[in-house]
Image (cartoon, rainbow, N blue to C red; front, side, top):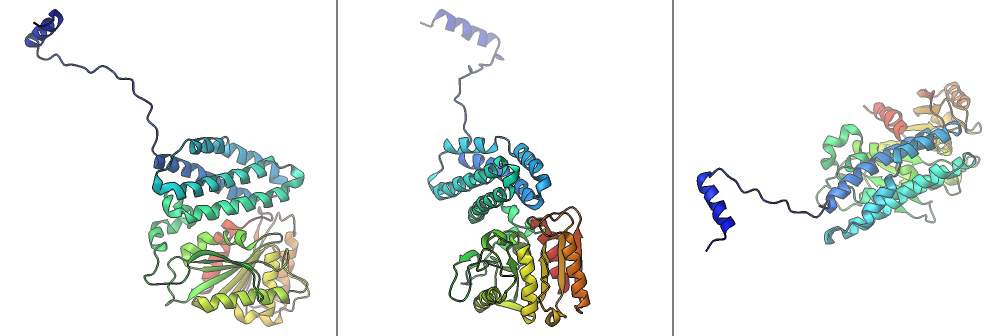
Length: 387
């Protein structure tokens, strides 16, 4: 026998068949994002920090230091606290374990770079810049290793106009056995340590242009290579970033460092197909100064020289380099080498009979890193010489 309440309900349904049962709400457990969704969200944050810290590196100046710290702090906020918290509670799938460890380490290094910079006092800003730059460099090399697994960050490694061709730029030539991408090499009896970037689509059947990128005083080969990675990957250049034999380049007696750099170049040319007419040299600060020495002592090796924020040593004999094109770039706010030294270098080269000397003065720039300068000024000038 049916329960009286059930009998009443069935009667209602027979009289009014439009009655619909609505399921009772069930208390659901909170839904957690899957692993890839969390990483994708973190990629956007990391990209924002990479771009912000590059800007800091390019704009570094004693008069701007406090404002740069404030701007970076406001951009970052509690981002790294949140990223670490998310990662601490995140369990990667088995196939993502190696990626996860690399991502954890990279995020930690970026956090370190940020912390060193924003917590430094005004008196120690140069030291803070160099220490934070070292952590920033290590983090980006880790991120480059996993770039194919980070679709939001992947375009960071090329110029905007090359994003549409990114898959092609990453595609290796079949059966090509040469080492491509980024590699770091120790010093030997013939030369100092160096870093090398070879485009992933390297084809030994083609002749490739090569840029020698010279770090500044107190800098390193691996750090300065990264200022050239985007344009080199986008446009198809090999980049050789040698390390000075001492803490900086031997400017007064350059021959020992000249031999080291040219020996490194010879070793690279033995392994890769280099266009001998498009071996180009550029450098920042002491590296810019040393690029003058390379041009003066070995003009036959180079297609062009582009010193950035450097000084032309008065004891260099530039008479052998009269046919070598030079691009001089200097900041109007340079606090290490006043812009007057670049104006003097330009005048001196012209007086010495050099046939092609271009001088670009950047009124608002100081004495800092050169990402956008390489991309906006140096590379287009190099390319224009060989059109």
